[in-house]
View 1 (cartoon, rainbow, N blue to C red):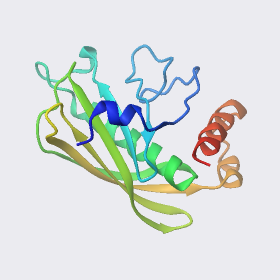
View 2 (cartoon, rainbow, N blue to C red):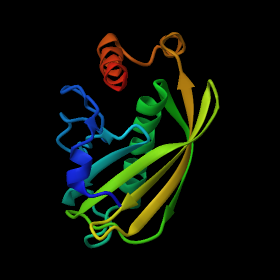
View 3 (cartoon, rainbow, N blue to C red):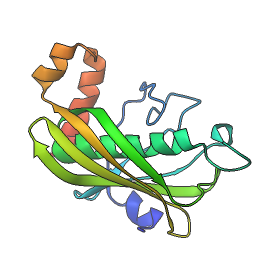
View 4 (tube, rainbow, N blue to C red):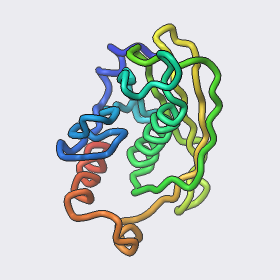
Length: 170
């Protein structure tokens, strides 16, 4: 596992301040507020799951763990492939407990770009000892700007925030 100080020296991916997303939105007071960094091969997100998202006792809820992995794989697809994305499917293997209020790191990368419209991603969550706690694999639909506009899912402000990400990765 890469340490937090190394991650914070990587290129930080831009995220708009008004973003209400539960996973990465900095303006969502109930969300995870994930921030993402890249080394050009993988995407990393150091975070601590807040207490209000617990399952049993001090364990993170499995749905929240799945959200962390989906978010990391999504940002990896967006930033490493330079495309708009939607999640097609994903699987999660829960290997060790993920504790709330403790530092974890999510990591994701491209496993395979199947074609211009489809990619397979992989993700992992490591705890503060470096132990692998969860891993996932997801299939993501890839879209051009024209394709995403045909679906009419995003307003101009959201599309502009993606442009900031695409510019940042060059």
